[in-house]
Length: 184
Image (cartoon, rainbow, N blue to C red; front, side, top):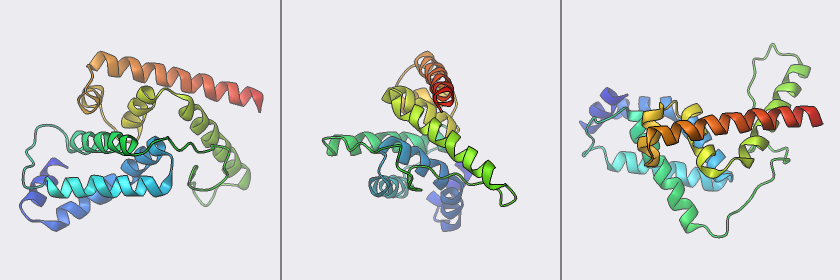
């Protein structure tokens, strides 16, 4: 990725296209799960890529490209919430595909698809209940594929703080999933 960004900074547009293709899915899911509203998430998503494009001439390899990208994303999400008051809350009970998109192989039986959707809904419910700092660290780790050191860099915290937040997030998500499974 870093090599692709260096190539892009030198004018190779195909390198940018490849970076975009590699990171668009995880980045958009990270933003959607942070912002919660598809239209607003799309705006933040576009803002992030515009900043990547604008920074290409100044880009220097100092960390993984994913760290660079999610650092920009982290700042754009914070800016979004600073611009938006009050917060717009969404219902995780909503059955729209905006909230939960579960893609499975065509060979899966309908029962499997329903079970996957229910699990995804339970996970999103539990994720929505996490404190924002824990949710962000979890999403950076899972959606962004960032290491603890990279998460610490992106969020401006220490490695141990990032590690602790991730551990607490995973524990709370497990509890939330188990509790909802018991209730259902």
